[in-house]
Length: 302
Image (cartoon, rainbow, N blue to C red; front, side):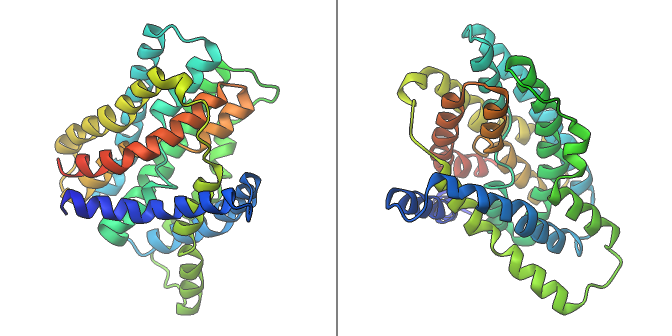
C-alpha cells in the first residue's frame, strides 16, 4: 500500500470521528452520550467482534508471541516516558498522566478498524491478541499501579479481577475454548452483524469525547508524547518484529498497534485517580490528529 492509500484508509475511519464531533457541536448528541455508547460497545459489540474473528482463526506463531511483544513495547514506553517526566520535572498527577498517555495506545478503538481495513480478518485477529492479552492487560495492571502511585484514589483496584471480568476478554476465552466446535450459521450471522457495529460506534464515541482544550498550555509535553507514542514505539516494534516475527502481516500489525494514538481508557484512569485530565484529553486529541500522518509513514517502513 502507498502512503496515499494508507492515509485514505485512516481518514475514512477517522471520518466517523468527525461525525461524532458534528453530532456534539450541533447539539444532537452530548459528550455524555458517549457513555451509553461505550457500554454497548464493551458489553455487546466488541465481544461479538472478538468471538466471530478469533473463533475460526488458526493458531500460529504470530498470534502467540504478539502479546509478549506488546508487553515489551509498553514497558519500554513506560520507562522512556518516566525518564522524560523526570527531565521535564513534572509533578505527581501531571507525571502520571504523561506516562499513561505516552505508554498506552488505543489498540482496540482505533487499532481494530485500521487493522481490519489494512489486512481484513487476518490483521484484525492479530490486533485482538495484541490488544487484549497485551495492551489491555497492561493498562489494567501496570497502568493502574502507575495511576495509583502518582494520583489519589479512594477505592482499591484488583487488576486480575478487572481483566478476567472484561467482556472482550471473556469473549476471547470462549472463542479459544470453542475453536473446534462448529458454530450454527444463524448464530454466526447474528454475532457478525453485532460485530459490524464496532467501527462506526467506536469512532463516533471518540468524536463525542474529544475536546480541544488546554492544548496550548501543554504544547511542550505534547510534543514529547507524540515523539514517544507515534514515532519511537513503532520504530521499536519494527525492530522487535524483524527479530521475532516470521511474516509481514504480523510485523505490519505490530508496528500499527505500537503507534496508535493515546488510549481513551487513560482518561477514565485520570478521572478515577485524579491525574491531570486536561493533559490526557489534549494528548488524545493531538495523537489522533498526528496518527493520520504517522501511521502511513510507519507502515511504509514495513
